[in-house]
Image (cartoon, rainbow, N blue to C red; front, side, top):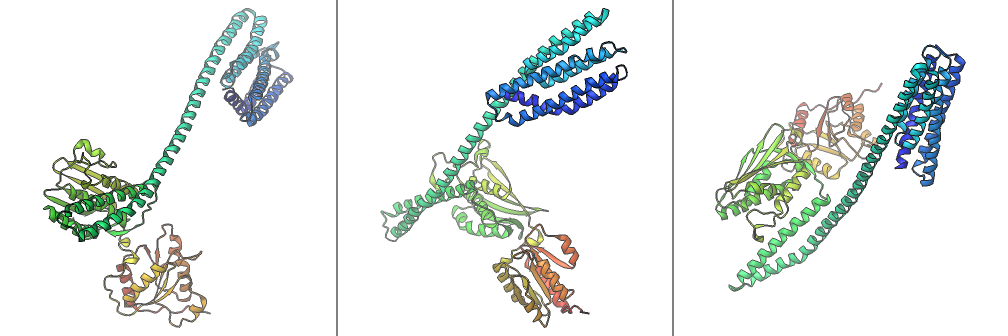
Length: 580
């Protein structure tokens, strides 16, 4: 407590130096109209000197405050007490030095100045009442004595008024000090609570991480004997008898339930530890839905329910293929599992900038009081006995976490006895992101009227190989480079290429724009297409080069086909640059 009180007073003393200087100069100018200049200067310079000394000593105290022990703090308190007494004494004699023998209300102005100084000191030093009250009474005693002896008929009332001021500010100092102590106590308690909370949070995070690591290790290790169990049960199936067939079927069902449980635990542990990183790419969600509907169709037929896909035939979204497929699979699996009449519909609705995916069923539905809990781990609707045949209760928990990981908006609507609908809102992929470069095995057939000689510059081996195969399948002649084509190779070229396709970000400091600039310096007007996965591309540099096709990875093959088809129609070979 003493340390913080000293800190506040020392800090205020350092900050108050400039204000004291300004106030002393203004007061000296005012005194100069009624008081000899030498007396004014003799008052002002000591005031300025004390302000400087106070600020310097306070700054030193602040520098050593955090490392000071109890004895050092007591010594600093004593120093501050003496500085306060000296300052208040200097201000107290002001009314005598300026007002004695002067006319024109100099004494009144000097007393007012003393009271103003006391008001400032109340803010600064009142957190330590012994220091403030001692200085205040010294200041007021000089003023009261002056008015009592030099004030004439008005002297006694003024002296008594100053005495009353002393009582009031002394009480105010004690109240301020108590409020300061209370605020410090609250601050210290809050600091302790925050420290304890931080420690408890760290312990909880470490325990959670340890739990996740344990689940990951345990799930992996336990699945090894589980796999053996499944293999052995399949071997028993080859030699089963009517007496053992039901027993073997139960073994397979139990092993299958354990496999699903361990898979769910492993997925949850990966999500909790943050070891799953989405790989975003353009996906045709409509095609994914059709594939899943075909996969679940036999199961639905066996249950006597329908399974349909409706909506857009093609809808491209930007997401992680594996994780999105896992979300969709879990939702469809749940819908089929809890639907005994009617059917399941998976719909895809492409809107302006998003694609809405919905899985709805006519199953048992979810009661309103249970809807808030369906995304909790191990919570199941209509399975109070925890029948493993109805699942582990981890499916929707995994769905929720995967949706959060992918940044998807997810909603649910359900009526008990009438069915449930889960809705996902996914970001629509831009038109140039509708298919990755690796998915060029079956592109639309190009219509190239003549063969196009293409230079391909790409440092990623797989992308370079896939693009080369696609270009060659379209009838292009491809010369591929990992980086900037060497001078020797360029000098050996007798017929320039028809076009350049280059990745923007190449190995080292080079870029596709550097390659384009170099080739155009040799063959002006060379058609150039830059393919980039870098959102921070320098568009000013692109504009400077001019007439460059810019595509964001992954690129729709039809864009390349159309661009190459236009070049093949022109079939213009760039002329070499003229050299003077």
